[in-house]
Length: 137
Image 1 (tube, rainbow, N blue to C red):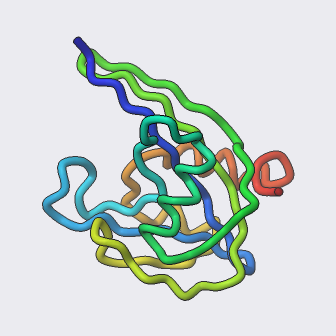
Image 2: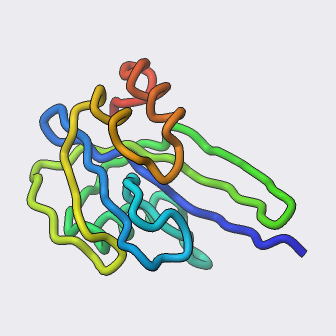
């Protein structure tokens, strides 16, 4: 039987720059790569609640207003996944990293291509090339 993952990811913007987090080494997936905030959806938790919770746990940042910009589904021989992608704006760039990350950056959209990204690199390009469609609340 395939493992099933239900997760969230989110683009977090503050004054025209976007937050990326570097995964610590030794993690099961994508160790040492850059990613957007997110995580697994808990039982009886709505995806929006998960994103707000994960953002706070991973960064110490608070947000209340989020917008779902897409839902991605994928499947391999071993895994089936569904990912809800959100966008939010925050007022502060003061990040307090959680246990799964070793660094963070606030970067402009054109600089994403210079990072070794964990997942969704091609989708980030789509989101940044169509900001009025995706990057508004």
